[in-house]
Length: 257
Image (cartoon, rainbow, N blue to C red; front, top):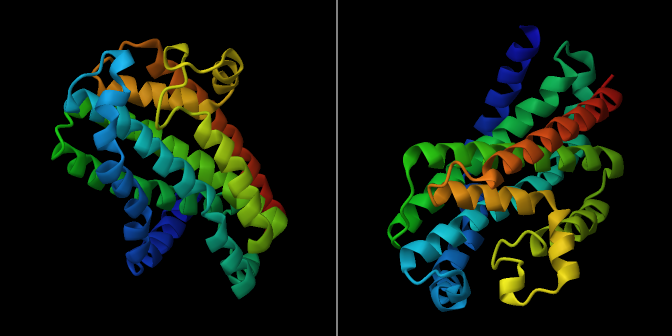
C-alpha cells in the first residue's frame, strides 16, 4: 500500500507540473496534426493496393500509426526532463525521503502515459472530422496499448538518462534508436510485398516490436478485435513494458539510495 501511495503522490506532483506547462501538450500534438492535415489526404490513392478506396478507410489505416508514432517519440525523449531534475538536485534530495524508488519511476511514467492519452484523444477527435470511424470499446483497448507503449518508451528513456546524465549524449542516442524503430514499424505506409518492399526489409520489420503494435491498433480501429495482431501486439508490448519498467526501477534504486 505504501508503494501505491508513493506512486500516487509522485504522479500528482508530476501531473501538476505538466499542467502548469500546457505548451508541451501543444508541442506534442503539433507534428501529428501536421501529418493528419498535410499527409493523410495523399493516402487514398497510395493505399489502393490494399483495397482502400474511401477516406474513412484511409484514416482508419493512418491514424493508428500516427498515435503509435506519438507514443514512441513522446516517451523516448522524456529523459531530458529527468536530466534537468538531476542537475537541479531534485533526485539528489530524494535520497533523504522515505518515498519508494519504484514510485519515483512509475509516478513519472504514468504522468507520461496520461499526457499521451490526452494527446491521443485530441487527435482522434480531430480525425473524426475527416471521416474516421471507430467503435468506442475497440478505441479504449487501442488506448490501453498506446499507454503501455508510453510506459515502455518513457521507462527506457529514464533509465538511459540516469546512465548518461547529459542531454548531449541522450539526444543523439535516442534519435539513433527512434529512427529505425519508426521506419521499420510501417507507421506511414505498410511494409509488405504488396508495396514492393524487399524481403529483407519485411523480415527486419518483424523484429520491431512497434510493428506488432501498429498492426494491433490498426485492427482495433478497423473493428477486427478477433485479429491475431491484436493479442500479439498487446502481448509483445506488455512483456517489453514489464522488462523496461524493471530495468528503469533498478536504475532509480541505484541512483537514489
